[in-house]
Length: 143
Image (cartoon, rainbow, N blue to C red; front, side, top):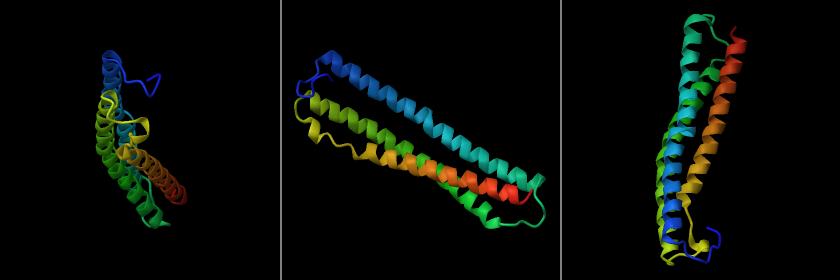
């Protein structure tokens, strides 16, 4: 979109729409998958740690509970982000169509789902970080 006031020609419109659809697939297959995998893996490692390495009595068990809660929350947030992210891309494709038809201006092209996806992603990263730090603190104290 070189000039936001000029509608795209048909080929440009189709290229832009295709890019949005491919980006939606990329979103669903990369960031979400990695964070869900890492969260699940950290949860699994913590259970293995408890079974194989930890002392029978635990110091700071609340750190373990905080870790599990945060890692579980990360997985839930990422699942929500995936759903909302897909909605965001569908909305963006719809907005692109309205823009192409001259029924929407650049200033009216609001995509709340995209903003929500961004927030969910950042909160999930924060939750994952707190989960990992809590797990590390618990592990260090109990080795």
